[in-house]
Length: 78
Image: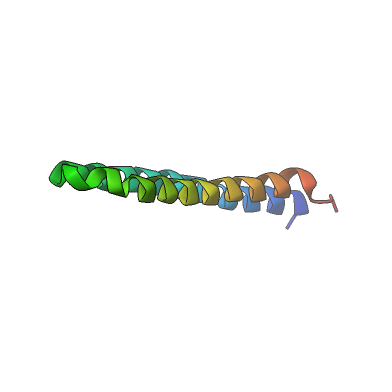
């Protein structure tokens, strides 16, 4: 297999993590809103957990983007 083609395939596979992060953020906010509508008194206490979950999920998406960019631009060409 051509090394350049392998780099492109690897970068594409790494970008799947960005889609997973988008799905994860949607699930986090959707479940928070569902819980806040069911019990509005507890919503302010759970907001910190919401932001923490959002930050961790987005960090994983950014890490996958970083890996894809490293594969495309920082890897030495053979």
